[in-house]
Length: 184
Image 1: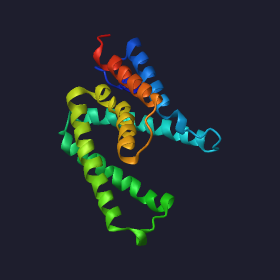
Image 2: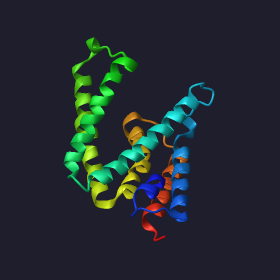
Image 3: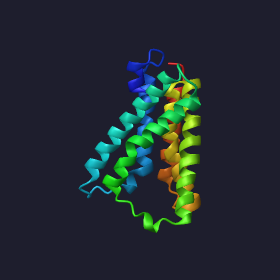
Image 4: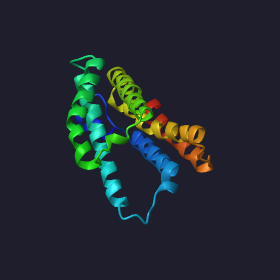
């Protein structure tokens, strides 16, 4: 939203939208603060990497908005995933040291599921939303994802439900509401 304010003429920020962003961030913090390991030496590195990734995510969203003026969302999805694969694939061998000898059929199906449903279908819908509603409104998905992930963890992984999860989720939804629904 903040980056879009400077790069897209039709997506301006207001004080109420900034408050909504702050409330949403605070909700995400409440959702996950109990999982943070403050004694870890890698915490600062992880936080910096999250900020860098968020910046690239925001820039990518704005780039897709600009591309949607010249091409349909399915073509944009194709190019986005193709370039992402080409540029990230070499890092698999540099950073991860994959052991393909232990790749099972179940793991292969999991990778296919993530590739098809999580990436192709997910990004197609996301790019369609960017094209139809704009970068700012579509980027609010980033706030909703932790809510779904948390509640799916409760259902499928038997993670515990706490009052903090409920408060965090409600704050996130209220922040998104402020950013998107109030005329400011």
